[in-house]
Amino acid sequence: MNSPMPFAALRAFREAARHGGFQAAARALSLTPSAVSHQIRGLEAALGVSLFTRGTRSVRLTETGAQLFAELDAGFAQIAAALDRARGQAAQKVKVSALASFTQHWLVPRLARFEARHPGIALEIETANALANFETDGVDVAIRNLSAPTPGLAARKLIDVEPVVLCAPSLKLKGPADLAGVTLIHIAPRTNAWPNWLAAAGLAGLKAKGSLIVDTIPSALEAAAAGQGVALAWAPLVWDAPAAARLVVPFASPPGLGAAYYTLCPRPARAHAATGAFIEWLVAEMAADRRRLAKLHRMRSAPG
Image 1: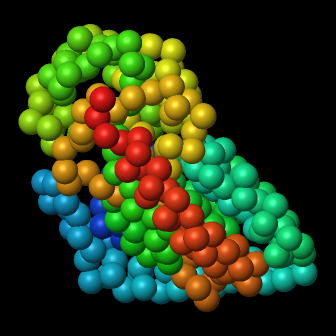
Image 2: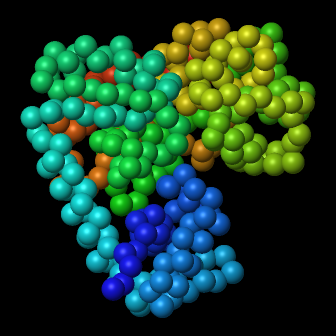
Image 3: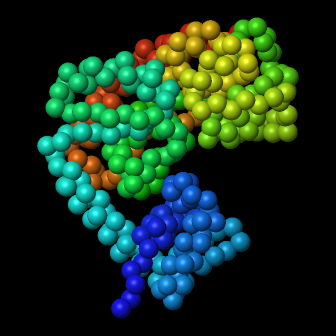
């Protein structure tokens, strides 16, 4: 009798095939690339076939791998659909995974309106920076700030955003080169935000005076307002944060670094009605608020 394939190895293979590489699969599964590679090699050894052709910097599915992925992906979708049916529509609970800043400063103040419109739907909101895993975390919809929607998921854009440099007025920064004399405040796990910003500003080699890593944007804003360093945040949503009123924009950000907030969930066939109702409400609520945010952004974002 053939022994069953380990579920973890099958899931690692599926994510690597979906995302086109072991590193992207590792991020999706919150594993290291070497762990993903080890699981896939174990699966290949158990099957006696190669599932990927490995290059120096990339991997691609073999013919056998492509066939297995197509059938396995459909199987995972069927499992997820069965689990959704088992949860039952009567429960009417939506688990939301969102960034702390978005939840605290924009979403929570509006939840009463959602409850009034949908009294039979209960929301469970968790704040997290990492991408949600819809198959293992029980999350129905995620709200994330991304440069582009995540492949394989249904995405709805909420609002375009752009990075903005924020600091206490006492720092008196004149230009990007002055960042060498201050502490840069990083958000974990997005510690690449400042390096990307500096590269776009033509200062890839700049070495800041210090580095401070905090877990959320609200924490970064509070640290910046206390004069502990310079933060990067996303406008126009950042202007709803109370700490933003104590901060200034010392200079403009370089172009080409824009992103957007999206709702993300499994394809519509896998999303239950309550999730759809929440997403539609969220999109409409943001559309109604966009003019206010744009006006606030024009008032607050001028360097000075």
